[in-house]
Image 1 (cartoon, rainbow, N blue to C red):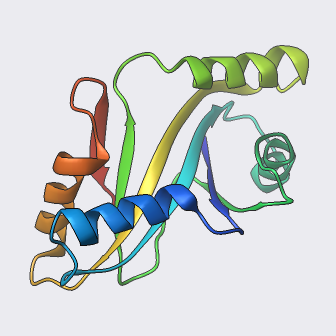
Image 2 (spheres, rainbow, N blue to C red; image 1 turned 45 degrees about the vertical axis):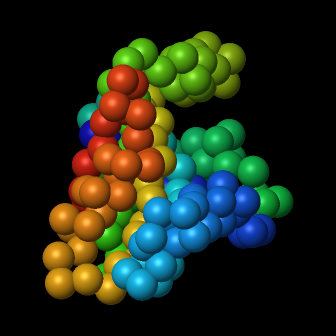
Image 3 (cartoon, helix red, strand yellow; image 1 turned 180 degrees about the horizontal axis):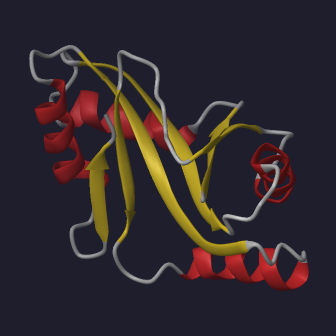
Length: 157
């Protein structure tokens, strides 16, 4: 079973603002990019024998979310996004040391032995005024959001 934790900042997101400004002011997407938001995603593979996935998600969130400045949404298996944006998931296709450290901390220090795997990625939610927003999102991902030597991207629709 997979538990997804989507985490976003309650406070202004400087990284998202920088990416948006770059796309609008330097790369010429000002007429089609109407909004941009960033979320962190933790996809946690857990034992299928977990009896109460929502309760486990809340316990894991206490360890992975700084509730002073972040909000989160937990879901099992499927990721659902609001209409009107194109979500672009960016992750590493090389070994992710931070995800391995988080897995070790959850399993060995905090006792969450039911957690089998942790995947970490970023979701960029692009609001695009275009006849083909997915094509435009792919273009933006390839020119700015990823480093092709270490990252992959996926349009989540």
